[in-house]
Length: 98
Image (cartoon, rainbow, N blue to C red):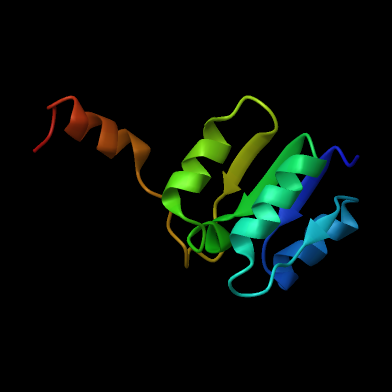
């Protein structure tokens, strides 16, 4: 069982592969299945932000909230896929911002 698995695009995967991390580059439409498979096989799943936008938000939230395996969505180095601003969302939910 690999300790970690990276899910993302081929270019970013090349860097992770050089670091010794097993990588998977799922085909279009296969992102959710790749996440489920990686969760079954590894103790740490690293998901690129660009890939995460193609996974159902509910399924991704369940995966990220699970205690095991740890699932992390990594920021996009090019900034093309923007992660939600969690701090702003919390301030809005707490009524600190409109």
